[in-house]
Length: 346
Image (tube, rainbow, N blue to C red; front, side, top):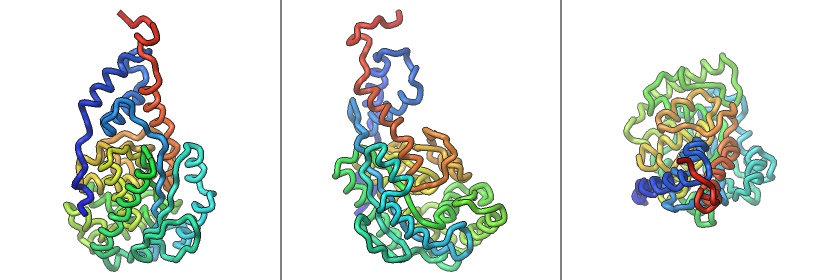
């Protein structure tokens, strides 16, 4: 299956019609600022005059990373499985925010380094975590493709359940290290400009993390022009799955609300696979992780919120969702000058 075969350019003509209609609403032209831009983008994405974004669908992909053996994280690897149980039990930040916005929520084990016997988990494990990419490729090329297709299928399934907006998240101790490595390859930037605190490491560990990533890039020699090669050599199973889910949403003309650094890294890979996919993306928030700025710039996007988040698990995107919903409702429910009997400016 070619996951990029059916992604079409967004409908710019529909966007022009939405812009003209917004200018007839009972407000000074442009007075709702970026909300108007978002409404136009939603019309372009969906091809509808009055696009809907509710209900949203949240998918959390979980996987482990072999590179944690290098001491790059403040938390031990077993936290990944423990947090998956927290998601299932409804106690994580994303559970709170998903309930707040009325989202459907799914948790997918695509590569956790342990068996998790619990109801409420979609079991799609490709392997028990990636290998340590300082020593060997993180995964085989076919495993990267498998995780990509799993993400595509789960994204498509969520859309078939009725999701009008896809919000993607991740859980995987060590995944900021993998993401920093990927962004370094795609951007050509120095690793030192891309590596931050992750889960809360100190300055000495940051310096160590930078050296680990640089060593891995030099050893693995990923092909800058082959996103599957980059994923296989330096990536994570959850990053691959998120990439696939993004491509599924773009195929079905469903807006994708992108979360923080790891999800934006996946969005970059999706753009590399299909440049048209980027027009279906909205960046939910600006992460406090320093590499996020570079990733967002490469996408040519501007985040909605800037709240200093660096949690992941789709938390920032879920908090940003009501703003996207406001853009949709503005189009659908505001009166025009004519319908309200309000005098327009001369």
